[in-house]
Length: 116
Length: 114
Image (tube, rainbow over all chains, first blue to last red; front, side, top):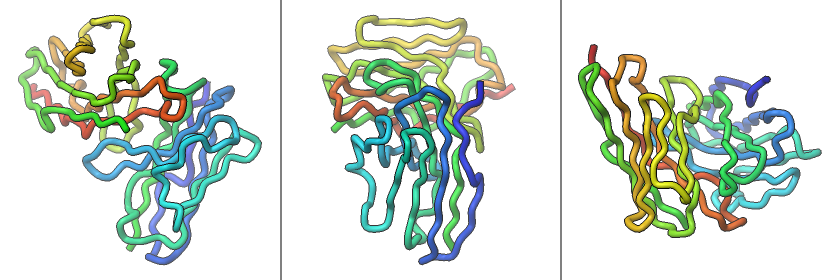
């Protein structure tokens, strides 16, 4: 079974430029998450989708970050414009249901962003 | 919201020794506590989890204990091996439908010396 697939794996951009990350969750998983992981720290939730609905986006900096999950499958996370402090790993994850139900959350390999 | 604290931040042990990592959480409604292992440049991978209706769970050399009253849980690795070297994260999630996502601790870098 294919795992969570993310692209690109690595991206280097200049500050103020836009960037987008794509995620394909595990087939059949209706819950999708975007997490931000800074170097040496634990992942922090940016947004959670149940199917195509964003049910928790309270930690998403909406002035520059946006996300969508059209048709409830693939998802895209966009940053525009990027700032130096956005350099981090952006992890996509999926699960059959919400984590509170004890469903295992599976992570992708992450998209490593460097803003210069 | 939930807050998870994890200690120690780094841990070095000799091969064959045991390693213990401890976490505390703040939300008494949390009911699911997984542990993830992350090797350098790789994705976090689930190694064991525990639900609030049990106090201990074991899988070969790995065990997790949960004390709901004190709101803390621990990871125990016995007979450590060099391949156990990685960063370990604890996490917790709440039954509240609005917060069914994992809150992670800050991680423990475990180094097993051969």
